[in-house]
Image (cartoon, rainbow over all chains, first blue to last red; front, side, top):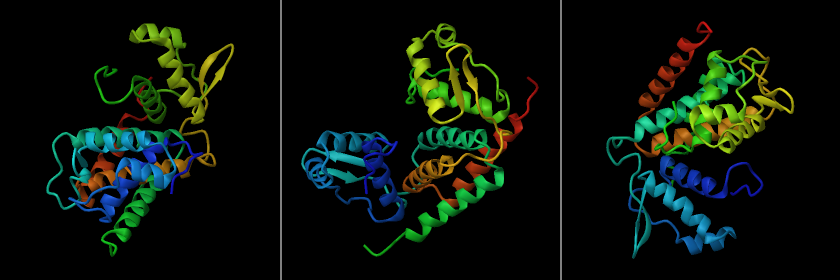
Length: 130
Length: 130
């Protein structure tokens, strides 16, 4: 699951996988994430790395961290309208990602087709049996 | 231009602005970037921060760094087909960005409309008089 030799830092990969699991419905609001020690042990990585991923998810508003129950999914696609402030930050990153594609020479049609196929991928996985 | 109190690290903001300038045609292949010391002084930031941005752009294949001439734009949208390896990495980040939007409750129509309007924005700025 983790690419230890990849370009993306491990905490970012963990964060991305939790986000993907929320997006596809594999994780729903109220679901508990494994403890940082448990997930660290399962993945054979330092639990501080897991903490860093969870802190990021909390700062993004997707999970909450309780002293007792640990990390719990706070929002999923069914949790109501997007919260204020989320879209602006997301659009800035979208703009940077699109500019990068154009700078590298991807055509508008290429970009559109990548967006379509990745969206389709997310939809297909969505609401998979849990 | 820089948001010193923003969530994005400064080097990332510099990198993003160079990428945007290449995407819109403001910077073309062969154009020299300011020296790290010059840009650091202009922006009132440490030149190491500028170096970090330039190193990232070099690792992404968008600029080259010569001992004599400094940082020079290596590729622009007219430099021919996208180089191998670029699209895969880009798609992984696209997937993560789309999953994030869905997790936060953005609808497919919202996402599509953001992609369209940001793409339009890039095209409008494109080939602006230099």
